[in-house]
Length: 598
Image (cartoon, rainbow, N blue to C red; front, top):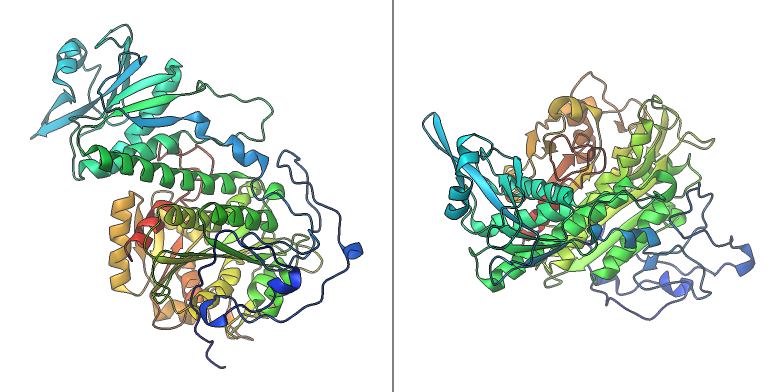
């Protein structure tokens, strides 16, 4: 088949004049746009349109068939003002991180605060270790507690001393950093601090980071990680509960006493940390929202709202456009659901238009029943998290745009449900992907790779500098790596090195997995070019990656991240994550990867 034409990203103003539906479908400067050339289409009559959908997230009920909508660019709507779901649902406004405010204290400890937080740590010499506090005066004050090993300096330890009245502050909290210090130690210490402070029900606290050890990271990176940890630990998803259970007082304020960086640099780091954490928390909220309240259409609306808030461009393709664009994988997976699919395109230009973009691709399966190859009923409710790859790509895109990284970035999120409806894809059916390759669907529960295939074809057409995709793709990854590491696959050693550096900066653990021609051989089809499941046994994650590789144009650096084990329920591993909720995994790593191309 003919080689697809090369595309580049186009910069669109954050606010532009509203266009009619027919105008939206016309091609605008095809040489500078990621959008394929569009043809005119007559407007439908108003009488044929369905009534307005409920747009309050509090209405907990199934959303039925939704009306086809034209491609919607940022700030656009149809000429007849067709009602749409709110792009920033009321529920989103409730997630104000429990009104936590983190400020830099330029004047040291504030006597008006209710609690002062200090840090203990261990210094090892041979087999012996000694406990130290980041204030020699406080160490003397707590000598008896240190000698009695009440304060040991172990990681995540928290000891509260009431009525100490040290420097005029009534209560002192000592939190352990451990002995092997990294910036991740500070991120987790921040979570310990926040949870401990909530038990005191104070409204105002000092956090003394001054004179804490740097460990294997510099103090700037530690400050950034610490503030991230505070905001990450403060996230909770309770917007659907009628009665809130929040012990955080209104106006909860933390004053950081740092002293290791200049005031201007420290202010910048605190702001960066807040942006990154808020973007992770947005990804978590999208992931935590149940399937009836986060359909493909609603996810698209949320993505548009996120892009608008950062001054970036958003384009959404509906079912008819997806079919027209020959995305047979995405269209086929969505056939069994009443909820229509969406293909979400987010574009941010932070540098010259001539520079090739970095492309992020995320699986946006808003609910996965397994389709005709139905999943077991046990824990099926967790399949609302099958959209976490797409949600986390939205979060990473938002963070990069708000941080104003000097890079061109495109995010692609194919979104659908996988349901066993009457029109659903059947085992043995054959579909054709955007690049013309055909695949047998021998197990409808291996659907994520099918919707990603079309997105990877589109990503390749942009001729990017690199493609990174994230998906909750295989249970085999959970067997291999549990919930500690996200596995990634690439044949590009240079790209792998870049990923390892980004992981070290973000604090998120990744592990390189094998991808060989043998895995590709296992994915060959009998009646089509490919099968969506392996002909052999085992290596389920590697063969899934081998399938995806067939839709990436040769020569383009590409890496696939399987986050099936790290997308949710990390509370037992990471204390700044909810015990059962979405984790926002890889948002921080993808931000660092985007930054590496500046």
